[in-house]
Image (cartoon, rainbow over all chains, first blue to last red; front, side):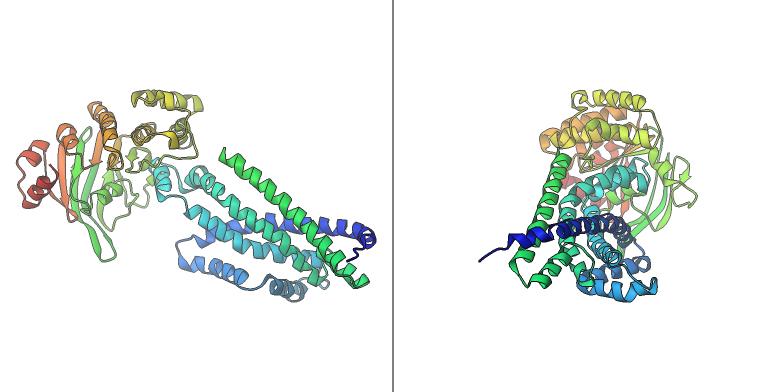
Length: 217
Length: 240
C-alpha cells in the first residue's frame, strides 16, 4: 500500500482549521450542554409530575432519536425559521448542545440521587435550607461521582461533532471528506482524521483522569 | 418544650401513627421504646418535620410545625438530631462537619465556630480527630462527632434516633456515656433506643409504643418493674 504523505501535507492547513472548529464545536457543546443539562436534570427531579413532564420528554426525544437526524432537522427545519442562511457551524453547535444536554441531565440526576438520603436529612436537621444543603453537602459529593460519566459524555461529544460534516460545517471530518473527494483516496484522509480524533479524545481522557485523581485526594 | 396532640400519619393505607399525645417538658429526658415497626422512629422524625404528618399538631418551642407561617429551618436550628447511621458529611473533616451549620445557618464567624467545635470535640473525647475525615473514624467515634455536630448549633432539644443500633457492641458504651453526660447537664432529650439499661438509668420518663400508639408511659421504675399492659410485659420479657 502506498501512502501519499504529500497530499496529507497539502491538506494540513485545512485539517488544522478543521480541528480548531472541532474543538470549538465540542467546547460549545460541553459548556452549553452542561448548563442546559443541569437545568433539565433538576427539572426531572421536581416532585410535581406536570412540571416534570416536559423535562422527561426532552430527554426521551434527544436520547431516543439519532443525533444525525437531529442535526438535519435543526439545520434545514428549525434554523430557517429564524434566519434565511443558517450557518452550519451554529446549527451543529446547537444540535450538539441540545443532544448532550439530554445525556448530561441524566448524569446529574443520577449523581445527585446516588447520594444517601441521610445526608440531606442531616443537613436539614441542622437548620440548613434546601439550597444550602444542596450547595454544601449534596453537590460536592455528587460532582465527584459525576466526573467519570461526564468525561465519557465529553469524549462522545468530540466524536459526534464529526456528524456536522453532513451539513457542511467546516470541521475536521468535513475536510477529510473534501480530501477524499478531490483525490479519490481512502486511507490518507480517513486515517489522518481518525488519528487526529484519537489524539483529541486521548488528551481529554488524560485531563479528566487527572481531575478525578485530584478530587480523590 | 414540645407538645404533641393527636398526631396521626399514614403511608397510603398503612397507619403508622394513630394518635399520639405527649408533652415533653424542658430538661426532661424522654426515652421511647417499643418493637420495630411500632412507629417510634417516625414519631421522632415528625418532631422536626423530617417526616410530614397528616393530622394533629406539634408545638416545638412555641412554634406550630403545621402553621404555614412557621419557618421550619428556624425550628430545626433549635432541635438537634442524631441519626442511627451518623450521617456525617464524608467530604469534610470532622472539624468542618461541626462548624458548617453554625457558620452558614447561625452566621457565626469562623473563629467562634471553630472554638466551639474544639470545645465540643474535647467534651466527647475526640479533640485529636479534628482534622481527619469521617471515614477513618470508628462507629462510636463517628456517632460522638455527630452528637458534637448537633450540639454546635446550641439546640434547646436533642432528638436521638436509635443512636447505638448501628454500632458494634463494644462501642455502645462510649456513645451512651456522652448522652448520659448531656442529660446530666440538663439537656431536653427525646431518645428512641433499644438500650433498656440507658432508659432505666437516664430516662425521666419512658414511653412504650406499639402499633402506632403510646401503650403505656411512666417513670422507668413503673415501666420496667411494674408494667401494667400485656403488650408492655411481653415486649419487656423479650428484651430484658
